[in-house]
Length: 137
Image 1 (tube, rainbow, N blue to C red):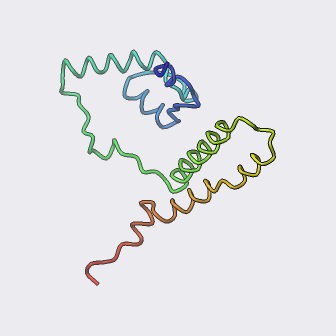
Image 2 (cartoon, rainbow, N blue to C red):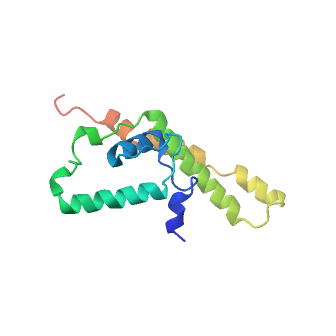
Image 3 (cartoon, rainbow, N blue to C red):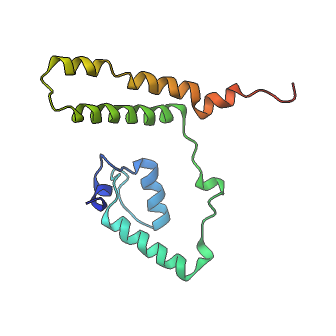
């Protein structure tokens, strides 16, 4: 079922930072190497939601800087490359005939990674920031 996908590390992974923040927020003592959601996490989340509904004094301010994280250029690029490889895997899985040489040729014609890099450097938030003109000049 769809609910079980959150326990699959290929589908959803917290990462090191996510595990540290979840442990701190929910007062858990799980290993930082465990980067998937566990049942203990779910029970702690439900417990925290119940506590928030009872006493709304402990609410987080979503606009506070401690709740923000700046992603590096490499991390943004890594996310887009991962999505590109998932698209390639989907296209390969869609083709039933893997032994046909014409199908293998079509794999090399995928310009998914090239278009991903072009999109990143051409239309990402960083390149848009550099392309803005100064209204005072």
